[in-house]
Image: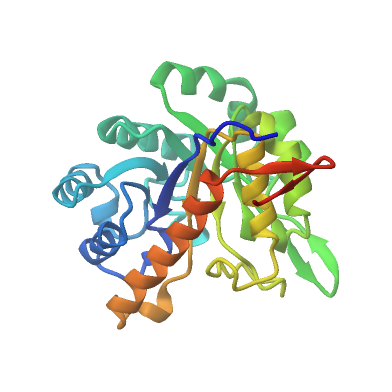
Length: 278
């Protein structure tokens, strides 16, 4: 059996480019052949308002199609401390860009109002503004083998139970000691966005280049293809070691983009119920 082609959209995130000037990051993504990108709002004030990123992207023929809100620990003060206000500001940026999704983190254990908002109001808010507020898979800290959690809804099924839209991060799932393929099956009904990278399996959120870690990414992308996943696949790859090596950075981004494109567009034949590349 040969299923229909996947309609997933491939993007690349600016998140790992925190050490780069915004212009350099966008130059690299444009040179690597990306058309759509995901903009992460960081401590850099130039990422916090839409006008400059929109102009820089347009000059490079890039479309900012997703926004990652400032929900990292290092950006906790950006746009204030209220997560619902962060979402309101993020939706305003998405509207300015014409972006389709806003990526947010799940509530911390003490953020009761935010948790209620996600459960009771986020679906209607997303529908009203035409932007999916997608809650991302996060992970606990592991101390002497013990699981210490700061966020709610760390299990994939919990995200599905409480969130209208979810985002799967392959590296985060590995740190959380969740099986990638099983997690995809669980999250699929609510899944709109994927952050794709590899992971060394060492308990660190490494966001490695594809095929540089232990994740079954060949099988994962084949499963996206087989199930006709139609959301976003956004590459989120660590680029720090390329800070002074622009040519190698471009080559790496091209290599990883082509890896995903090839596996999402090739024909997948099913043999005895298991997907296999021709």
